Length: 238
Image (cartoon, rainbow, N blue to C red; front, side, top):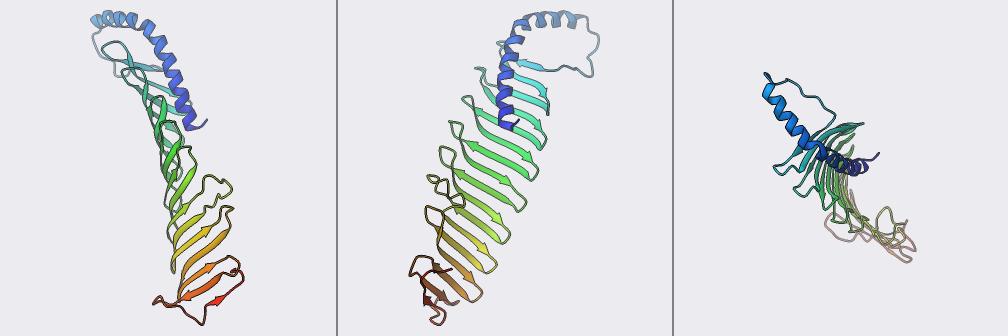
């Protein structure tokens, strides 16, 4: 079961639990008052499968319980709507923040470190920040949850990739910029995902390659001047 599914399931379970406990709340209060009158000491530990916390009006505002993964804490606003869910998970702790019944933000731990997801009011992911074995990654999505841009650390430096979310076949992006051991790298692809242009720094200068028919290959030296000995017209750059 995914974390999102667990949080949504917990919200439903909590609402059911609240309805069940409200019916017996009055009896519990009366019984508790009678028992308190005869209690001579306070127990060191109180055990129960779940606890319901109510406000001054008798409305449930928090529930402490458990599921198959561990402990669970759900907090509600004064209108009984879910606000926060805090639970244990195999990868670490999970914190879900709700808005109008939808998950607005999710923070969790996983095998590589931390994960943060931001949703819009429709429940679609619009941003995600997480750790991976190389470093950090930031994903930006459109209002429908389709990836628009990726910012990431890589072995040789920073990297950014931009996507055309109207064409899912371009899964590798249509434009990218990054760092290499020699300097910067910039590439552009067409709507089918085919690379059509590259600019890359090399130890002796900068190479600009256009892969159109009758494209132009130009090599610049470290002063930004065209190296005419290395530049040439080509039918199609490799």
